[in-house]
Length: 430
Image: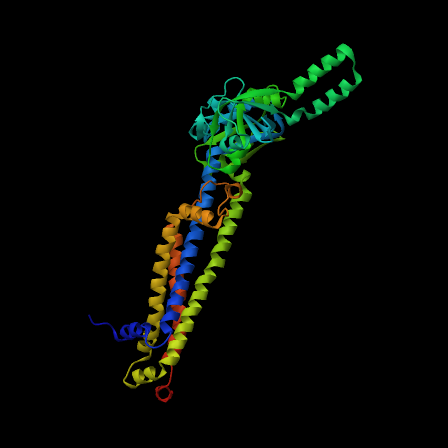
C-alpha cells in the first residue's frame, strides 16, 4: 500500500531512531489522553449530578408549594380553586416542621411531614420509596427515612417518642406554675405538664429510602392529624402541595394560582425552592470545563515542543526535500501529520478510557476508598448514595473535536516554520 509522501515521512519521524523524540511524542499523546479522559468524566458526572438532583427533587417534592407566612386556615376552599386551575393534576395537605425524637438513648431533631397518604400519593409517589414495612399511617404511626432509622437503631414495629419544639413555651409556663402550687394543685400541675412534655408515642410501620441522603436522614412521615396536634394547629395546615402536568411548566401554573392567593399566602415552584443548588451545580460544571481544558492545552504545548525538536533535528532533511522540489504544504504536512496522529490517537484513547471510567465509576470509587481508607464520595456531603453520571453525546463531541483542533493548531505553528526554511541555509546546517 502506497502512502502519500508527506504522511509516509511523518510516520517515519514518529518511530524511534537513536533519539528520545518518540518518548516525548508518547508523553504528549498521554497528556492529550488524560485531558480528554478527565474532561469527559467530570462533565458527565456534573451533568448526571444535575439531572439526578432534579429527578430526586421532583420525585420527593411537589411541583408547586402553596403556603403562608402564618398558617392556612381556609385551605379547603383554596384546594378547590387550585384543583380547578389548568395544568394541575392533584393537591395534598401537609404539616411540616422540626421535632425532637427519642428512641432508647438516642435523641435527634429531624423534620416531620404530616400527610394524608391517599391524597399525597396523587402528588408524590411515596409508595415506591418504601424499603421495609408498609406506608401505613393509620392511627398513631410513622414511616422513617432509612438513614434516620440507622442513626436511631430503630426497626419496623418499634415505638418512637416525639416531642414538639412548639411545646417549649408551654413547658416553661408549666414549670413556673408548678413552683407556685402545693398539694392537690401540685399533682394537677404535674399531670398537665406531663401531657405537654410527652405528646406522642408513634409506632414505626415502615422505612423509606429515596437515595438522597438529606431526605433519608431528616424526615419522618406521620398522619396529618398527628402533625396538627404536635404544632397545635387544630384544623389549619402549613401548606398544600401541588402536582402539575409538566414539572418544567410549573412556573406558568404558579402564576395562575397566585391570582387567587391573598397575602401572606404565597406559591413556590420546585425550581424556586432549590434554585441555589441548581445554580451552584451549573456554575461548577462550567468552571470545571474551562479549568480542566487547560490540561489539553498543556498537552498541545507538548506536541508543539516535540515538533520544534523534530524540525531542528531534521533541518538538513528539510533542505533536501526543498531542493528536490517539495513545496511548502508538502513539508508542512510532514510535520503537521505528526501532530495530527498524536491528536487523533490521544483523543480516541482518552474517549475510550473516559467512557470506561464512567461505566465503572462506582466500583472504581469503592476500590479507591478501600485502598486509600478515605471516603471518595461521602453521601453525607453529596446527598447521593452513588456517583451519578450522564453522557451527553453533544458534550463528548465538543470535547473530542476541541481537543483535536487545539492539537492541530499547535502542531501547525512549528510545521509552517519548518516549511519556510531557506533550502541553502538548511543544507548548510550542521
